[in-house]
Length: 64
Image (cartoon, rainbow, N blue to C red):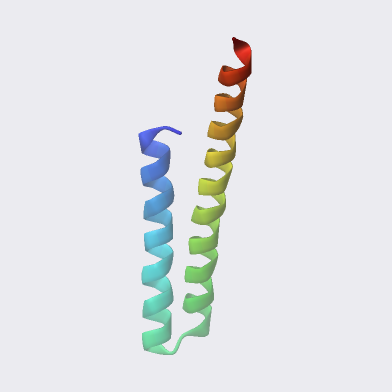
């Protein structure tokens, strides 16, 4: 996983946490749910990148 991909995914999760907290504080359920969606999207991307890394490592292990 590239450094920039990790950073982008973490920023997306952080943005989601911020929106979620702002929505909760303002009493805006739409903003809160939008924040949860952003947080989950960042987490899903992170899992996808980790799966790619695992596949790449498995190929490297069995290549020998």
